[in-house]
Image (cartoon, rainbow, N blue to C red; front, side, top):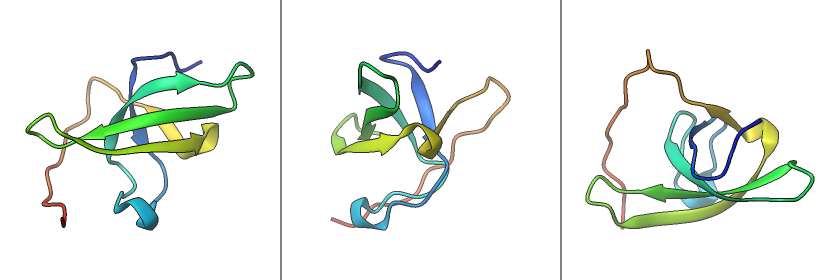
Length: 75
């Protein structure tokens, strides 16, 4: 089970938040039944870009053999 403060990646695009499959964020809250998570997404400058509620199937753990990808976010 994914834990609070764990780094995760999206498994879907969330266009309403300008987020894409593979974007990484940090779990900041989990519902008591573990079916929904609140994920905070940051820019590389450490600024919060979005705080988003997602379902358990919309995120996955990030592995040690993955490479992060940077892209420019629109304002």
